[in-house]
Image 1 (cartoon, one colour):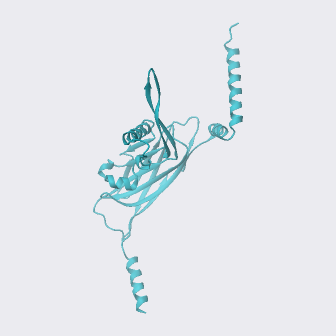
Image 2 (cartoon, rainbow, N blue to C red; image 1 turned 90 degrees about the horizontal axis):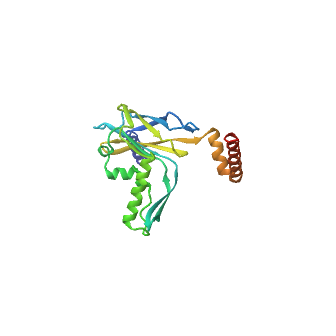
Length: 253
């Protein structure tokens, strides 16, 4: 009898303990369509931090960090070297399962929100998704390839860090604005939203949306991928036909 009473008291005490915040997310769209007129798109994340009387009191304000990770793929980097009067590939590095799009959004500079150890735990940065250096390459070469990969991703708009991408409407209500480039890869995009207070992560929630081709662009892409022979023959015939039409139109009598 005493044992059951002790278990009941323990259950009541656990039920009465303060609990953490809950995070509710909603997206402005679950699908981004790529057509022939596509030049980029925006997806807005709406977030609400729920708390009740049992939630632990916080001395500071909430900070929100959003991490957007696009579909993964393979990236191959080539480093050119000069051999006499020509430039040839001197070395190369292949990265597999690398996010082809990566973005970090916040309401202020990330360095003022979380330290480097926290960034590593939450994987806030594309460099945390790259494989560890391999013994086949010297350390200097490895860092050179990594820096080149990050630089090229930034130049293409596929790697961004926007310290004004999150807007705190109220202390517990916010929006995060995701900007997709014109060359956004198709596939599933995962959005991880983390609540922090005084640099401590409190809760992380995840949402997602899909980027896909539609219409004639989707038809051409599917034909090139699934019907390679037919697509190749059709392309050759179209080139011959267009060449013949151009010859007829611009032929001088």
